[in-house]
Length: 354
Image (tube, rainbow, N blue to C red; front, side, top):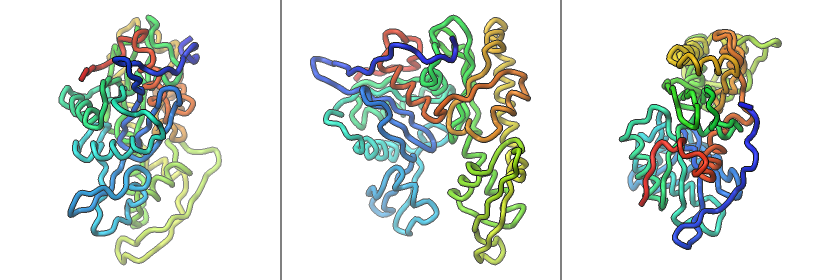
C-alpha cells in the first residue's frame, strides 16, 4: 500500500576497504539541519545558523546556540544563516557550520563517513557540486544526494519502488519541493521559493501594517505556530505579544487573533496551491490517475500549519495526507536510502566517489 511503513528495514554499518565507516543521513535545510546516524536513528536536530566574530570569523556558536542570538547579537558578533531556499548561499560558513554540528554527534567513529544529503528538486549541477564539496571538506568519504521529497516519501513509509505514481509535497523553511515518484524515480518535479519562513514573514508584515508594531522573528514564529492557520479555527484563539511601536520605538503590546493571521497568510497559501495545481497539470495521465486515487502526501515542518492540508484538499479535490512527524520524514528517508542503496538505486540524484 502507498502509505504503509516499509518492512524489514535494518540499521547496519557500512564497511569500506576493511575499515568501518559510519553512514550519515543529512537533511540540510534552510532553517534546520537534522542528522541520522546508521544504527542509532535521528541524533541531531539543530537550527541552521552560525555565529562568528566579525573581525576574525572565529566561530562563537553553531546550531541552536547561534539561533538563540537572533535579534540580540552583540556588535562584535555576526549571525549567519548559510542556507537560502534550501541551497547553500555561503560555502565557507556552511562548511564551518557543518563541521561544528557534526562535532556534536556522540560517536566513537565518525572518520570518513558516507553521507546521504538532501537537495531540492530543482538544484542545478553547480549547486549540487557545492553540497558535495562542503561534505568532502568536513571529511566525507562518499557523498550521495537525494531529492528532498523523495527522501521524505521514504521517511514517511511509502514504497516508492512500485510502478505507481506518488505525489509528495515537502514544505520546508525556505522552499516547497514537489515530486511525483514512480519506480524509485522522480517523474515530475517542481519547486517554489515559498515555504514556512514566508508565513513567518507574513506575520511580521501584517502586525506592522495593521498595528504599526515591530516584532522579532522568534515572536512571529511563535504566533504562527500557536494560533496561526490558513483556515479559520472552530474556536478563535488569541495571543498577546510585545514589540516596538513603529513611530515612537517604545515598547507596546497588542492582542492578535487567529482569524487575522488567516487573512495574513492568504497570499503565501495561494502560491503553494498554485504549485500543486501546476504540478498536477504536468503529470502524465496514467500517473495522474494514481494520484487522484491515492492522494497527495504532505511532509516538512511547514506542512503542519493549521488547515493547510484541508485547504489543499478543497482547492484540488484530492485527498491530502499529512505525514506523521512531518518535519523528520526527509532525514529518516536519508537513513533508509543510504542503508538500502542496492534496492533503491534510482533515488540517487548524484554521486561522488573520492
